[in-house]
Image (cartoon, rainbow, N blue to C red):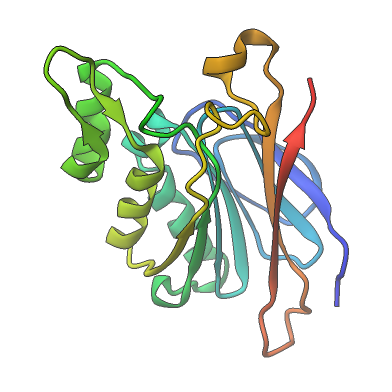
Length: 205
């Protein structure tokens, strides 16, 4: 059983690209990383966007879900890659949606609001007279996961812009560090019990 993990990561570019890897280290460009090998941690870095960790079947995934990724289907790409990797069944999957900028602070243009709304649900956009729309990225991720058949989903509920314990690009600007989340399998592929590990934290610039 692998009790420790070595990270694998991507050059994130706000896409819907999902990559499957089995070795630690830099793994290419994309925004969803799928790993089936025990002891290799799928890792994601964010500063306002939503980190989503998923465990299903013999695979785990770390997803960088900004508004572009959510509008473009990055979570669906991750689930497809997990299914190809180990026949993951969404009905048995579990997802964790980490700290991200909240609807309290995420003001966007109407064009962005419409794109994410069309890809998820009208409930993810808050509109008030005389103000720009506010967008709930974490709720959009939750809605999309449910539409993909992932019923077991939990959310941290924290807004990183409001909470100084977390980095926020909208609050801290170009000097912002990155929040990170990672997930890995601790079991041998031959084991019958699947025990993924998930962690999160904050990195300095």
